[in-house]
Image 1 (cartoon, rainbow, N blue to C red):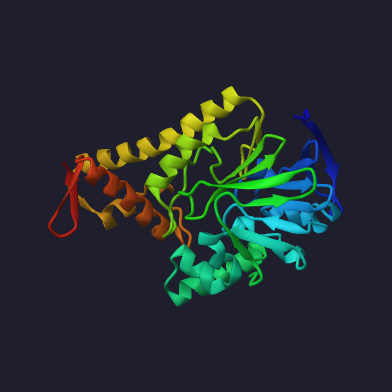
Image 2: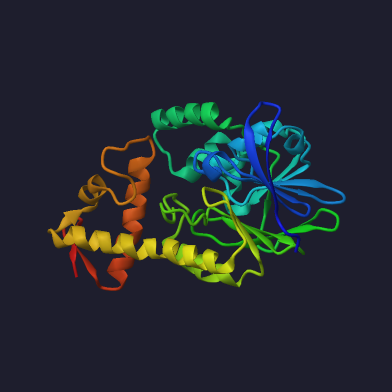
Length: 313
């Protein structure tokens, strides 16, 4: 395992980007360590192929090091992970099979995100084209759990770890022991599972499996960046996982005030602060709260009465 080398340099667009190198692996940290809407760009230079893991906004400011990529492997398909695909029209693009429609067309993306109203679709499409350079890739191919890409002396191996999306995968760079864990991003916001194909149960299972991946370096898509100390990684993973139970407790506290409908709970918000709004907020809040309610119903802590009213069990 190579020791990391850190540097900060100016790119062709005079944007200062911090870079961390682990042998043939380079991590270009996005704005604020890749805080959304940006992300962290991973490039792998094998003897035969230059590969990119995801393509966040920062990829548009790297220059030749990124633009020469011949292969893109997406850990999952969300707008902020596809922001550089337009720069690589000749590259081979792969995405998890369950997320593939979101990469291949806008209709597929809208369906995957659960956007049903045409007005909402048009509004979000315009925003994503403007802010994330969203460009469909009908040529993208799907991959399954265990897929490998040989780069020449280095390879990428996909481990399916769903929850965030149905296809979300961790990408391990072998033999270097580096795991790109994507949107298991360990941020203070906590896990996101607000898409139609997301799953709270799958996210819990993926978080439990993550420490078993053979790695000594962990790279997140957002904000945290690079971990090289396992103790710190495990500490932050535990705090991130705890957010799931905190959200369940928050719902129980709201229901302790009296029985409420799903719509009433959505108004009080579980993820986003009251007053914050975006085209997707109500969809995400509704799905997230419903998944916690289903879990609480299963363990008997919540009951569902007539009229779609939830109360403490």
